[in-house]
Image 1 (cartoon, rainbow, N blue to C red):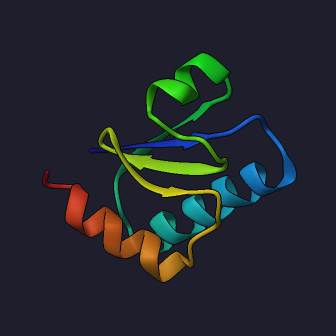
Image 2 (image 1 turned 30 degrees about the vertical axis):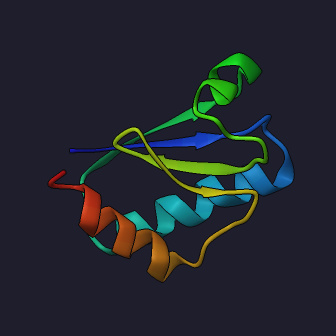
Image 3 (image 1 turned 90 degrees about the vertical axis):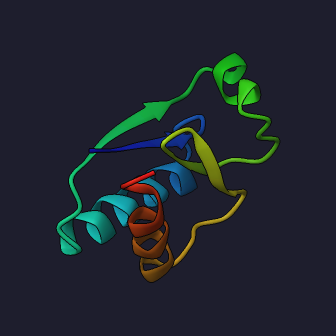
Length: 82
């Protein structure tokens, strides 16, 4: 199962990234568990300076933007067996 984390304070862009990620992964039938990380110390531990950020299996894939759903699916396919 793919471990997905959305890092951010809960702002509108953070919520949008969560929605887009869920839609992309659900649409691609990817088994995943999504966690929202809002604690600034936890976010900083990933080396993220800009939110929202997307993490899959402990790899930061995006920071400070909302990737397209197709990109999210591509990353998921690359990391679901990693």
